[in-house]
Amino acid sequence: MRFALCDCNNFFVSCERLLRPDLEGKPVIVLSCNDGCVISRSNEAKALGIPMGEPFFKIRALAEARGVTVFSTNFALYHEISRRVMAILSRYTGRMETYSVDEAFLDLSIASLADPLEYAREIRGTLLREIGIPVSIGIASTKTLAKLAAEKGKKDPASGGVFSLEGLDLDSFLETVPVGDVWGIGRRCTASLARFGIRTARHFRDAGDEWLRRHFSIRAVHTAWELRGISCIRLVEEDPLQKSIQVSRSFGRPVSDLESLKEAVTAHTVSAAERLRRQGLAAGTVQVYIATSRFRDGFFAPAVTMKMRAPTSSTLSLVKAALEGLERIYAPGHAFVKAGVLLLDLVPDGVVQQGLFDGEEARKKRERDRALMAAVDAVNLALGPGTLKPALLFSREREWEPRHEKLSEGLREELGAREEKPGFRPVLRRGRRQRPACPGHPL
Image (cartoon, rainbow, N blue to C red):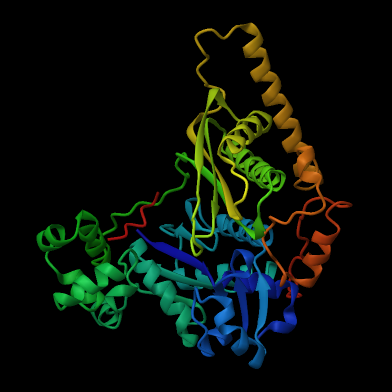
């Protein structure tokens, strides 16, 4: 077997630089929802000592003093760029696993492939030329080793972003890799291994299988096999059916009134229902929850579970159930900072079991609901997300919406004109650097 891991470098920052090419070579960070914590950093920002996950208020003074450009998250942009990256990668292999929004495993076990390194360089060049996203590619005989190779390619400028472990002295390479850098070995496991004197990937690889299984788990044994070059983590080409779908957001500012909470819950339910239909599923249960701040006295976080009469993918039915549940748990006098919707009991849509007393009219209603939702999805796909939505969401003042005060200038203008031009569909000029379960097996 021959795997290649393609990992987009500092992905969220790289996406922002597509719209701001003047930021190339300058420190840039991207913040989480509500402009809370640092979730992506350019290499220049890392060199300033800005840690991942750091609350922005703690490094605000440093960012201002050192000229760091700060962006709010824009997941619509990031997912669109990710889709384009994955589409290009799929040209180069018949088997691929989209591991995350910025990573993909490629099967390069191609008999006619004479020079895997040159092939990977071609992939990297195509992504940089057609989209403008820099990537690192690691090549090895297992997925775990490919992850390590990609990390080496990212950190070693001499590699040109592409690094292969084929034909190298694996013992010497693994001796330089801290055991905590191995895919699937977390902090707690790293600390436990250190107590046994296991501090490098080579030490871990050479540990006995029975000892690893006894002190950790069978997954530890699989990780050791992968480090030995024995492939035992398969390529997952199709996403497994989800067991639940959750949409939740912290509010831009606390809200107390029921109407604002209804808007938020409706928006979350609409988003969850769209994801449900994209996967061809129907939900039999809707759970709604709201919460006040955990950092203030009197923490209050009620939740309710609403059982549907029959599994459905209809936004109208799911919103109705969610709002009924919200009214049951709402209590005035609280400052709520978060709301969420969870869809459970998911089954394939179209094979929903009818109720015992359902008649012909119930069957026709399900068919009408599916046809209506298909039409809504088609319109929103053609004209932009949010073109058709519940009337409750046409409110102009939404105190509950997360803050995005540092959104890219052009995108902030898009959001400001949302009523006139609903939805956001980023347009990037192609080719110009303008520029434009596989188990994770945590031990």
